[in-house]
Image (tube, rainbow, N blue to C red; front, side):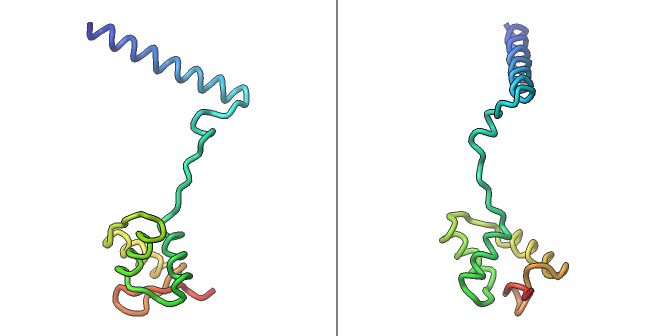
Length: 106
């Protein structure tokens, strides 16, 4: 019975591939293109929060504001690291105090 399941799985994957290829060649939208997922980057959310606050915020306040505004909980260490990398590259953000960041003036 196991070999029959493997065969059916293989045939299913081949059929899905062929269908996607036919859709692509005929110009029809793929199923994944019909309902695109909207994704918001962490940097966009941080910038939005900082613009709304119109002042630098501590990373904990940024996380709380993102959670309130976007309903997403971000990891504090990952967020701090990402912001610090942008600060070092002299892009988007500036550090005004320990773990406190604002928008870089353009």
